[in-house]
Image 1 (cartoon, helix red, strand yellow):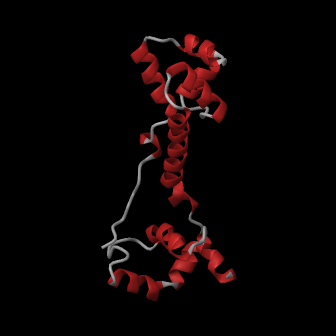
Image 2 (cartoon, helix red, strand yellow):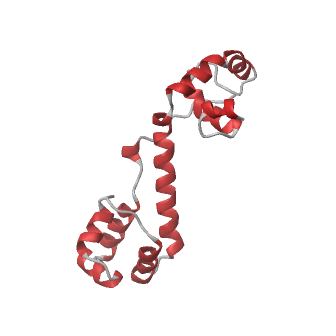
Length: 146
């Protein structure tokens, strides 16, 4: 049976900058030293550590050189962070048009619940992200255009 997935709260999602901070501490390195080693500024390092800036390809390469940790690790951390943020914020993207579409799909939704594809206690609005994927649209209102 399908279960309702709530996802992580954005406050619990770890920015890659926290990993940099952990590495600095473990290696006894200052932000100033990392800035010199990566050709950036201490202000830039601080903004990454505090989650205000992300890790670009260029910075990932510089981190690889400074820490000996592959650039793919840093790029994957950034990509995973951004994907988790999207997942956590997905519910906020539900439009009033989609709510109307779901209201008109009650027979189908009941059938999906009966088959165990949707959890019986799942609210209609909470099913919208699943239905988007099921119908291969980013907004259920687009179904009328297909």
